[in-house]
Length: 162
Ligand SMILES: Cc1cc2nc3c(=O)[nH]c(=O)nc-3n(C[C@H](O)[C@H](O)[C@H](O)COP(=O)(O)OP(=O)(O)OC[C@H]3O[C@@H](n4cnc5c(N)ncnc54)[C@H](O)[C@@H]3O)c2cc1C
Image 1 (tube, rainbow, N blue to C red):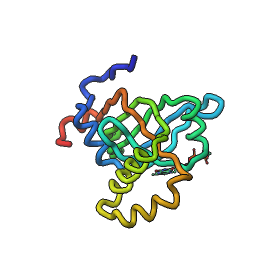
Image 2: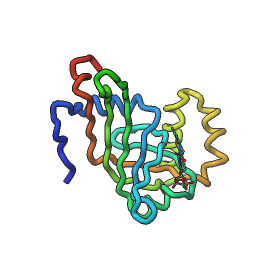
Image 3: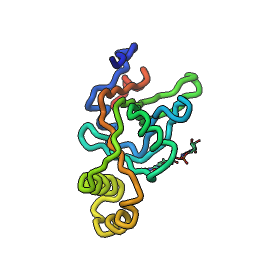
Image 4: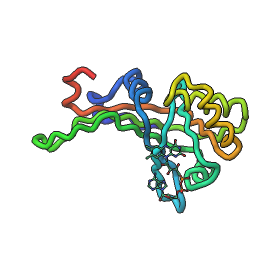
């Protein structure tokens, strides 16, 4: 049911999409929010295989939205270099579609949180444990299962090495 990209020439390979997700420090999670208004919220994340992992406060707009409808998309802009003389931007971005699960199992939740923390500050297990433990029961871990992943770059970037 997911759409094909119209400008196929500009489509990135799956490997290039994954590389963008691996290198990104944040992206925008889009959910169906209050009264059907789309709600795009910036979040830090880590990719583990075909899952994107987020952490969140236990309550709030995004949690209410996910509980009501787990379908979501996640957008990362990897590059956006404005070229004024071309009235253009040299861009590279990815969009993932999937469903978000609130992780309930304590063991899985801890493992995903450790992976998330380790992604941002590797090899600091003691500091990470001190960060997680007091918050563990008052937060959510979100697992976004990627069902469809596309990446696109501007025409100009196709001539340049990524
Ligand atoms: C680069 C980046 C990384 C972030 N990483 C994380 C993360 O890993 N985990 C995390 O929980 N949060 C992160 N945040 C904060 C996140 O964007 C939300 O503010 C936060 O998660 C609360 O979301 P909520 O829906 O519970 O907020 P609520 O307070 O319930 O939202 C109520 C309303 O406040 C407004 N609002 C909420 N957040 C923002 C925002 N960021 N900018 C403008 N308006 C806003 C919206 O109008 C929203 O409808 C990050 C923000 C940025 C910019």
